[in-house]
Image (cartoon, rainbow, N blue to C red; front, side):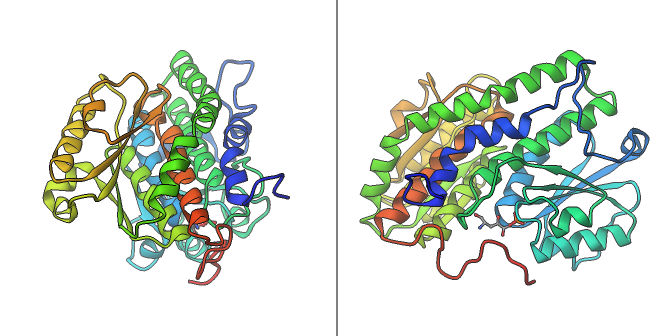
Length: 369
Ligand code: M6R
């Protein structure tokens, strides 16, 4: 039941600290190692893998896009991410040395299922990341890592998405450990940081009221809304746009911030609302590049809603509204940055009077191709 919430989606947004914590539970052994007992593929075989391909649809695909950055960084194995519907019908190059990671909340998505059947026919190994016990996709995979989000009822994925990112990160760290790319202390430090995320997500939720206010205000205009991000913030931007399309029926688009000058900036005009996900300050040059993107769109009249790390002073001059995110490393930022975007979409759709849990034309699981 909805436990006092107006929508399952809102309830599920607020369940995210627990969903993330549950997905992380029991992954550290007394021997000082990350354990993923469910991954019943031998370490020898996982050491031989020379390519990783992630296949998924919708939000799960965006979770895969986020994961690619981390998995390649930690394992140094080339990792591709592809929409399941594209992968299946283009004769992809996969063989027994390819590890296919499939991500599906429901475990029943037809395109994803067809993709893994195809991969297994080519003798690739398949690990499913899934939230539904005993669903078809995990049954047809070599191994499964379950996300422990609990049932997700709202059609728009929220806790499903966040826990998929977490499960992919655990798998990435596990592969790095097996392949000797990362050692005990380093992995422990990353797991520690993952374990600090539920509290940080909770802090974002505790401060969500201004995001709701903005959504209620924006429900009165019919403007298109744009989302910009870079690095792992790019799939977060795509996910923010997808939420808004799905439940608020607004034209929403996510862009890679670096692509602005290659076309997207042409659509920015006076008053265009643009959400920008800013990478954490000071760790690399990405932060400054995104800040200058904000400056550019602002100069063209955009209304900027900036999601940036707390204490980031560089952004305040260019933000019409600032949403502070708890401090964390770049790779983990999606776990906090996605949350205000989910809440924004939920509140805006509510204010427009839409059925948030059962949006028009959409089904929770897409079991036809
Ligand atoms: O059950 P799955 O994770 O395989 O579903 C994939 C997509 O259909 C799903 O993420 C869809 O895009 C959501 N409605 C997004 O909110």
